[in-house]
Image 1 (cartoon, helix red, strand yellow):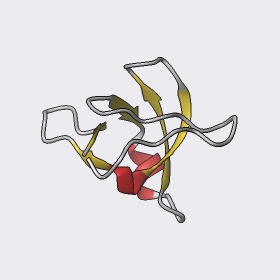
Image 2 (cartoon, helix red, strand yellow):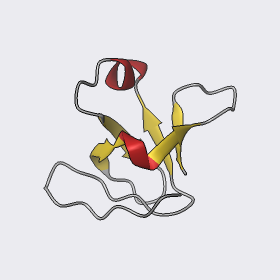
Image 3 (cartoon, helix red, strand yellow):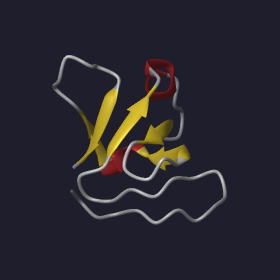
Amino acid sequence: MTHEYNSQQFDEISLVQGDIILTEPDSVQNSMDGWYSGFSLKNGEIGVFPGNYTTKSTSEYKTWTLLK
């Protein structure tokens, strides 16, 4: 993990170590600015988050994104 992210705007989600974020593949592939939309399993928030704080999971669920 590079560092945690505390949401700054109403449409953002916070990222904490060990969090699992569910994303839609289109959110990642179509992102022009490096921000993805997703759902945090840890805190239940839905919103956007900076993709450079995360890495794609190697699990069978290819839409899961894990915090570094």
